[in-house]
View 1 (cartoon, rainbow, N blue to C red):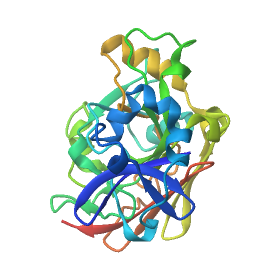
View 2: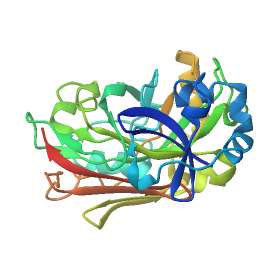
View 3: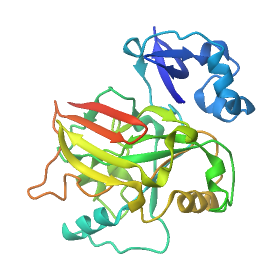
Length: 286
């Protein structure tokens, strides 16, 4: 099942994709104001039954896509979690060593944008770069979650483009300043539930800029697996329904190219992940 957050006629809602239309579950289940509230409920396990009982409403072409989870409590992003990306960063002069523990940082939810919404190149930089990633959405709260139990805490999977302002990212050892600009976190177009994903450890990930393939890998290349990321994050803080873990990006980013390639207004970035779909965004200037 594909589930999404959207707005129509200036009203925010959430629902399920059926064909080329949306079942507006936010309208029929108003006691769950947001998609994250629904994920946290016992009714999430009944989603097939609930969707099957309703008629589709607006067409996908009539809605505005919102970030899958518009206001998550946490967006946790893994750093250099593909070995090929780690190696290309070293080759570009960054001094970073592989560590025993997953390096992570946090994004603020206000940095997010939905599918088909513009990515904003900030006026303080022209070093805007792409990072296509598999996103994991937490469905069951937990603390000190073991790797063996981690899969039971996953609500589904989506696509995140961890767009980075590279020069601001390198102001200091901590990179969050280049990762939280407004309009630089595309997330979407929808969440796909685990039963439709297949094996999430073997999904093809591809990023294209203006139709040219820039990144091509699969999730078997992750240094720290999804269960390891969940275990590690849940040791630090409570994971709650709607939390997002962006699992890292493979090689092929713009700053590592020779010469470097950065996004400019008019560019179209597409991140495609097998069994999920395509997240597409055009770049504009602030």
